Length: 529
Ligand code: GDP
Image 1 (cartoon, protein in one colour):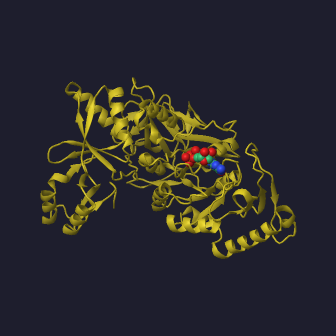
Image 2 (tube, rainbow, N blue to C red):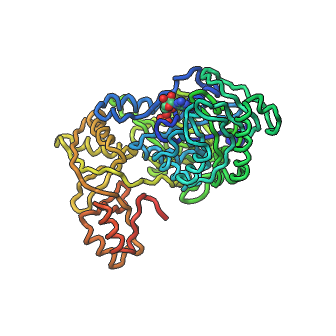
Image 3 (tube, rainbow, N blue to C red):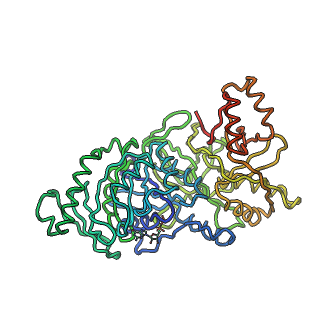
């Protein structure tokens, strides 16, 4: 197979959803289709549960599971499919945002009864901003839920999407009879048998045929005809180009648990979803077909053995091939590195591979060389962008609780921040360190890991911050900016990359500051134009 064919056959995507919508179940069914796993239950749910807050071993165990399910790859028909795991738990939202920089498309899972939920809104917004192609899967049709049209409206309004259904349910819940596949023009009847792997479908391109009544009954047939007429009248026809540009989102209905509607989703997905194409670096646009390797680290995972402090850096290959034992340039360190055991992922396992292609993810063993956002090349000084930090939600002073172990503490903090566990801010005024996290859970994870992996102890102290804002003055030399820095001195800090950050203590003070210093722009993410 040529290099170009290898690229064309790859589909690297993420499944996003609010917790409990059915992401894990859908992932598992997709893997079953690929023959990558033999039975249900093989994919572990890596949900970090709230109850785990006080049980550190539980957090560790769950972290272990999430290493295993970070990338799930399988073959289906002639395609190589890479699913990147995205934690649904909001405390780990930043992980998910970063993973979304490594996907070429996304499937959004929505619970038919709950409709659009909070986490879905946030994640879809990120995808929309980056024009990532999205397919929507409305799940749990075997249960009573919202009316399909109401749900489509809700998806459009709350998620700001422009949808077009490619399948449509026949009944729902107790009356769920099956799905009409608009894309393939056939009917798939629901038998409620979850053990069934491949479903029977009936080709049906003429919906006026009286046969429809005999198959699904008179009133269901009438309703279906009416509904499809409405679909045709209201929604735009599917157009792949618009989908690829992130301007149109096809919608499928089904029941992941019953493996129903999943094949339709997968078959359509492999046909329409994009292979890896190109990615913007700071210097230039890099095309996947370029021969020289380029890739970037989007995730770092500490390994399970705390004594070795061994980490796995996940690299998305953007162009060229990644080969075992070949030297590559670590751009930030300006240093060549070789990797003797790069890991590839297959189903729920990882294994050493000799060669990987654009779209693939390789896991590199790392002892502290990498941080999130690092670029690897064959020599070119290239920097991939698009892994911004978002304002954390919780802030605390971090103090050293064991004066003998200061060095260990700072090293530990440094490495955990590189992994993206949390963000570190250093106050301008006195050099005190503040940790900012998305969820309160991370503070405990950090404390636990500092102790068990670095032999250091820390304590926390509250520091009331409403939002961290990255400071972007129109003119760094003007009087306004000087005054801003003088007056707000107490609230200014540097992030780990040295960027100036304003730690607003309330929404009110943020608004007042914005009004008073209009030429000093304040951003909620670390990257802006
Ligand atoms: P995740 O948090 O999004 O990964 O959700 P899971 O896949 O763990 O599913 C959450 C719960 O919903 C589990 O109890 C599943 O068995 C259930 N579930 C998933 N898909 C369906 C479905 O199609 N129908 C029904 N009735 N339940 C489902």
